[in-house]
Length: 358
Image (cartoon, rainbow, N blue to C red; front, side, top):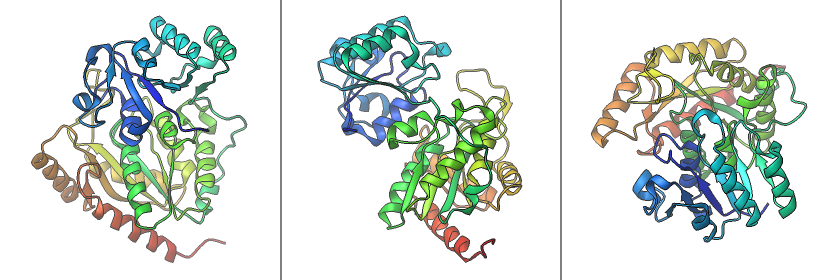
């Protein structure tokens, strides 16, 4: 597949915490993004809105975006209520008529929309429904615990706290150190960045762990370390099923706990606070207890998301997390990740010395 040139739709929700897919694609592949469609910030640069992204323009209309010659329109946010706005459907039809593919990470599969599907067919374009799961996924059988690579899973205190971003940062740096490390995407944003994976939150519940197992088996080919992208939180009433499926299906040898330092309550940040986030030390115990029921594992470090803190406040948060858990803690986007990288390398060496089961 040729490298795409993205026009990203993030209309009405383009901001540091509300456009995860758009933001992550911009952070890791800014050279592929020609512009962002968001009428609220039109006329600004992406850098002005997110604090990164450079001079990528924010545009007021699909017509403006198409003038920049994208070959792919990427849906970068989940619209309110999860329903595709009628206006967006018109925009996507115009983009297909202009010769663009559509990359869609929503739970609603646009390839099943008869109007858009016909526009794509008539123009020789494709609609990629990133979350559409593959057929014939297995039920997990513990095979991920037998791979020759060291498997590392990110786990979280809540959704959207930096599990994917932390792993992408660490994956790049481990590869720079000569440790063959492969990131395994389990969500739509990671798939868009990495080019492969399975959106496990769209998989039938019985097969979530099996999907995780399949991803580890594939990711371990030619790798020293497999970084499995975590999802949700083990105590989130809405998403804990996906979290547990990933934990048991991937059979991680180690885990990294991720947390947004200023977040105090579980749940979407648009909703009224309703469930207090426990102490990090409690999460460590919970994840280790549940993980060890299937495969030996432990939490080896803490990654904090400190985007909304000053440097001094962020460093204090990292020091507090270290003191509480006894584990190295940092924000790998903001600060030097060496303490966590060293811990990963050391944990892998310890794992290599363990006697292997027959």
